[in-house]
Amino acid sequence: MSVSVLRLTVRIGKSLALRTLSLHGSERTRPRRKMSACGHPLAALCQLSVTADKPANLSAARGLLEEAKRRGALMAFLPEAFDYIGSSPEETLALSETLEGDTLTQYARLARTLDLWLSLGGFHERGPDWEAERRVYNTHVVVNNQGQIVSTYRKCHLFDVEIPEKGVSLKESAFALPGPSMVAPVQTPVGKLGLGVCYDLRFPEFSLALEKSGAEILTFPSAFTPATGAAHWETLLRARAIENQCYVLAAAQVGRHHRGRSSYGHALAVDPWGAVTADCGGERPGLALVEVDLEKMRKVRRSMPLPEHRRDAAFYANLVSPGQEGQD
Image: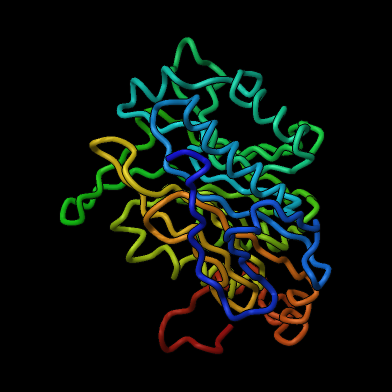
């Protein structure tokens, strides 16, 4: 699909805290401010449908990023595997690069040219012992508007799942290494980001650790399967937003990548109260603009102060046997 015919597919939420802004007719040439009418920063939530064709994938992403900038976004979020999706472990490994390679060099140039911060979902980064191990990291890279990498998080939960009755069979560890650690949230123009990737979403303690470290926005760039996406995607994202009283921004892959793999789509934004306020749909690439109101987040946290009510870790680890409640 060319950029000129790319349609934005969004579902407009009811919340005033996050809004999607649609594209129609004369709006193509009308300039946009970098803040919303309420003065809150705008983030662009992007949805792609990549293949193993890296130049074509870059071209499609460039079109969305240029549109995001024109419409006033300060930061754009791309999904997991924004660089490519290979048709086999062998092709996935062959197409991989280092952080200093051509793909991230071109994205850094785009960030500088567009004066736009980028969250680059899951990049196929060659591992530290590449020649011996031939494994990659699934790396979430944040690039600032000067084209500098300001944070990298290497996905630590790998998706090794077999659900035959749902047609799900993926073994990420066949070509990927688990990341060695989480990383602290990073300050950006839209808020303080906690970095995750896809399957990390299923581990609530992961998100809680980021919130405790100051995250205001949790990010889960993803490529969910159609079966698991239909069953769990929105539920999980809303749960993480509600539990941590954070915004959640989840860019997504959509559609068919090759004969053996498709993605669910529905790039989603969720506010700190758990309301879904942007949904890019499940049919085609596109983007949604998301208004981030951090004062609303603070209001939610003041009205229901979960961190104050949470017991310490030792309390949750010490379960007593039935009949021994209240005993020393």
